[in-house]
Length: 438
Image (cartoon, rainbow, N blue to C red):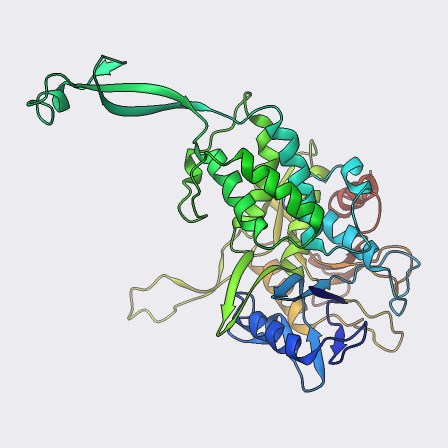
């Protein structure tokens, strides 16, 4: 029997055998696995804090599992009217996380598919597996994709074309055999290799009886396909066209499960798996994808993690060294033609609504960073964008500051984005934030 517990990011779970506690033996294994994770930065501080009396989550969400135990870490995403101290139901947080993942990773999560999922009892990992199985089962009912592959064989009768070179070298002493080269319509192609590898990986980690049954059925479908590891698959050979376009969405799921974000990890004698998402990166990606829709047909474009301008250059003329130092990569650079109109830095942090804190919890280093962007990129508007949360006023924050002086041309905007608002409202909100109200 596998136990499971759920906490929110930055949340704490004490050791113990209660419903809201984690047995210490499992806590040690989970912490060891977290420390071995690539997201830990060489220590456990990036995923979990392993204390004397319990575990505390950090800014990374997802699922960490060892034999017999799963720990689910959910993001604390609050909507208008939901107070920070209120215990939001886990199923609500799971839905919101799945929604962010669907947008950020192009996952095909339709409203109809969302209604019948086990939001209350299943972890985010099990829900993602269920969505993948449902989508893949629908696709394979229409048949596996196939394409013509080149084969070489020595046959008694000619098939296809004669390989003259091999016929008069390798088969020179066997004139009764013909060196044939021919094409065969086969399902043993890279696209099916990806799907089989995904089914194989998920079969070893799924806990839900329904998911395990679905994966067994799908494994039978792919029984004749080469079972390759994710590293051995040649992704460049996958070509999507009008004949197999329905597999585009499934590839997004497969990349999620087969990429480095999913980790089959071991720490000493402890083995397990983890599917983890740093919330700062997920929030940035979510804003990026929504901004793409918001700016469509506006005449504006943007780049993510671009710019790459340097803060410093060597001024000692005795060295012929023009290489810059301290390269910058703003999260989002919005352009109108060749002109940079806005630089956005997303921050997965909580703004503080306290009246006695005029800085509202905004980091001084973050402000310095945006001031440097304004100078380096000659941009009059730079923005710190935070997630809106239930402790803040209902209306999203839009506060403008003059840089260095009150009426300066260069301005820093502090804003929040409501992740719980309907999709259409989020699109309009981002458009107005970047372009101004029309």
